[in-house]
Image (cartoon, rainbow, N blue to C red):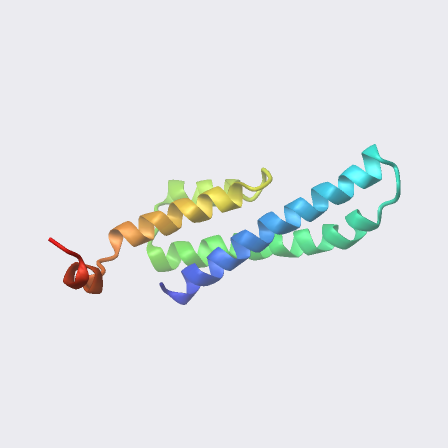
Amino acid sequence: MPSALRLFRYVAIAEACSWAGLLIGMYFKYVADTGDLGVKVFGPIHGALFVLYVAGVLAAARTARWSLPTIALGLACAIPPFTSLWFERRMLARHHAATPHPQESATSPR
């Protein structure tokens, strides 16, 4: 797998994890009313990972030659929580389907 796609995968997973942390922090700030430490910690982390995710989509799109609608979908998936994971899995499956694997054909039974 090209390094841009691997980096995109790691950033998409990290962005989803930061969403989880931010949502938990928002629960404790707004629902449980126990303080805003979680939002203060995860807010900047999520913001940085959001920017990295956008850059990762653009880098992966260039490497894998994604169409403009696919790029737009990937960028839109940065906004709702956890959709970066769905998009990353979809693009990884598409990449594996399009990439020939010669060692698999040599070892697979007929």
